[in-house]
Image (cartoon, rainbow, N blue to C red):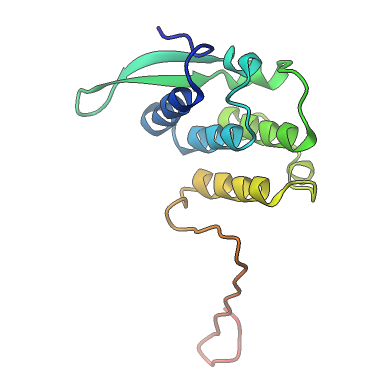
Length: 153
């Protein structure tokens, strides 16, 4: 099989997303997108915890996919990380592998806007709302009133 430590980041990302979509589910894809937004897919130490394999979809087409060993990654030393990278890695490991994480520490105010958007997008994808929720830089407020017109619903 193809060695994930030697392929381009774009190719690895595509294989991981295909794997998430075809074989692993929305939580896997959300976790991969977090790793990508943290800039961690380029790291060789992380890539050693990724394997590739062929899968056949429901239309009998073959796809090369990649899969993260989340359990091994959760305890791996992948070199120095800044705080936002560490937090996004922790959340990715939790979403992808079901390994508990302290959510309060992940969503602290030290995240950049881009990283905060990545966290929100990952949560939306994990809930199956990726197509229903739009995360933008522009704050909006919506207030819906009840039947009488004066009570919030």
